[in-house]
Every structure is written in structure tokens, then in C-alpha cells.
Image 1 (cartoon, rainbow, N blue to C red):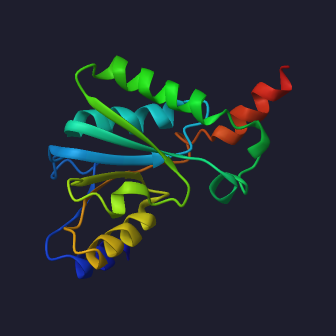
Image 2: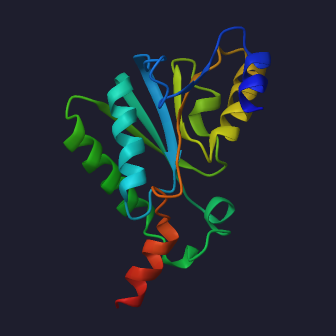
Length: 174
């Protein structure tokens, strides 16, 4: 399982499921979160809100861009520009927590600064992307860095609202 693989990789528990009431979320200094963030929907807002709540100082938002990461997505030609997605993320986080320092990075390979930033101490993922956290912590270990505490937000079928569906609905209204 993912939890067992994380436990084998690091000497301390580093995978925290945020819906577990016996395990309150830690306060982390610098938290990374990544995604496409196309047409911010409730799933994106939940992810960004939790990042803003657990980060003491900084949230680093990696926004996927380029053919390597976006080319295979359904309706990829309808994805908003990087600058539009960046503005939506920054505006939303500024509304949620104006005192928070927000850094936006363009993700070309999927990992971004989470693999190499020595000051990063947390990574927030959804249950559908939790597997990537293992690869990121393995790369950090190879780079001589401490593993990130990984916070997982579980998604269920009722809360799933894919950006691709929104893209197609929006495109159909034009």
C-alpha cells in the first residue's frame, strides 16, 4: 500500500489523511500543492483552502503547463492560459488568507520545487495524486533532503467535479 511504501522510505510517519479525526493536521511552514487549476471548481478551492490553513508562512502552487503535462488531458485545447489560471489561484488564496505568502511556479515535469527546495516541509495532495508524493519524497531523499510531510485529501465520487467537464460545458455555451 501507499502508506507502507511511505513508511519504508522515511523513518517517521509522513502520510497524513486529513479526514482522520485522530490525526490533526500539523502546522507546516512551507507547503506545496500542484495541479492544472483550470476553471477553479470546488475541488481546487478545497485543496487551496486546506493548503492556506496548514501553511504557517508560504504556499507554493505548482501549475501544470505545456504539452507534456496537459497534452493528454481531455479538452486540452480548451484549458485556460497559464496567466489566467495563475491569477485565479492567487486571487482565491488572497481572499482566503491575505497574510499568506503565495509563490506560483510553472510545472513542466510534474514535480517542481517539491523535489529540490530544502525549506519545503509539506506537500498537499488529493487521494488521486497521492502516489506522486512517494516519487517526490524518493527524489528528495536522493537529493539529500528531508522527506516532506504529505497531507492527503480524499476525494469521493460525489465530490468529483472534473475541470474537463466544466471546459466542455463552458465551450458548449459559446
